Length: 338
Ligand code: NAI
Ligand code: MG
Image (cartoon, rainbow, N blue to C red; front, side, top):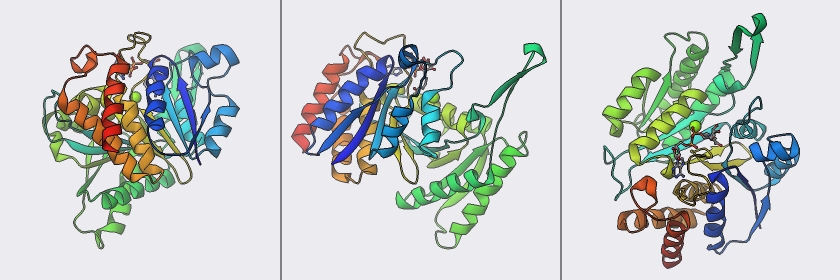
């Protein structure tokens, strides 16, 4: 029995979660879904954006699926808190071109690995000087930096990738990003004898932002800190067709948490036009984590085939179809494949 905690959250999070569950129900897997709450609506109802019950369920599940949450004034982000509570230290955000999707480049295939537990998203902020001075703590530890770099190299080796690039701003943030870069090269040298084929290099975040829109095909694995990873992954999404197509996995030693990169999209919520593919591809990543490699691949293939056919597309992809039309096309394709 696979236990999956599902947290639809707010806005389009709920709409794409409905699709996600339908996709999982197409597979011959014995899944027990445990519905849990988080987000702004949850805050209005329960006074917290992330109830203890939700954390407890997520911790004892095989994995957790998260939709999206709307930010709540003066409250911590529930998804950032949940990532920390589950100690899912590595946030994996693949950026891959799709056939049939119009974008500036073809042949993009890189993976952003973002440190998930610290950095500028420590959510430790303070106010001084009668509100005139506000401070955010940017925490970078050697331990977390080594751990995320080690994860990146292991992933690169496992996926037969050829290059791992560290992204930082160590020329200005000399202490914090100094430690991040130093840790990266320490880990790189521990792999260099056995895996000489893997190139290790590093870039400043501002330069990387430019390179990604000039020669994105040159990148393979990018490992970076929390905020930089968040920004680069939306940039990556923009390179291959937008946030509607961008999935993510949060992986730790014990837990896995899977979610689309996008937020609750209040501008389109409630209109049934959200693209469910980011969620469906997050499910494909979850199935891989659950060692259901066959189903993981078939779900991804079903998405690719439907996009290639260009018949059923939501408005973000230039079409006129509704969320459920695209979901049904992918479900039909999936049923044909399996
Ligand atoms: P967003 O990701 O919700 O939307 C950005 C743009 O992309 C919007 O124009 C939206 O319509 C479009 N978009 C996003 N997902 C789409 C989909 N599946 N299909 C079609 N179009 C899609 O980011 P935004 O607008 O900056 O934030 C909205 C709310 O979501 C805020 O309250 C923010 O704090 C929250 N947020 C939550 C996240 C999470 O729960 N993981 C991540 C990012 C933002
Ligand atoms: Mg983001």
